[in-house]
Length: 196
Image (cartoon, rainbow, N blue to C red):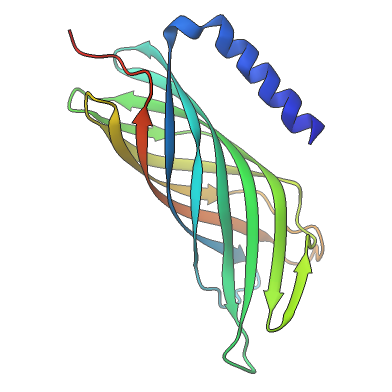
């Protein structure tokens, strides 16, 4: 937790130095997440949500950098072969993506970049049994790609897919687990450059 707070403090210090060139926004929406196990077990997706804030730094009329701080509910559902029950994996992250955006004149942007995730808490529920904070690694690395659209008032939407690259399993080292998430959300620019 101290590392997370130090990271956020350094980030906001940098933002303060460039405050005149930065727009601030809020975002939130739907998550459809799954876990990829390398032992090829059958896994179903799980719905959740994401909510957070972002800063949009315009380097030029066609390029921008967008760091974000996003609370994200992720995980998956695994059918149990002996019954109709499910094993449900719930992982809640503070994700920090840094998206490089290509800006188009019609309001659309395509974006991609690295993302580090800090695991806040996790739980596995299987039948009537619940295990809190099982063996998942405290941080993860992913690559999100997507598209966003905003109208001049600052309201818009974004859609992206987050490809999990790192192994988040810290319990059974014989099984590699990666978290993948599709996100669809609304955005609102609190400070948005109006056309003159």
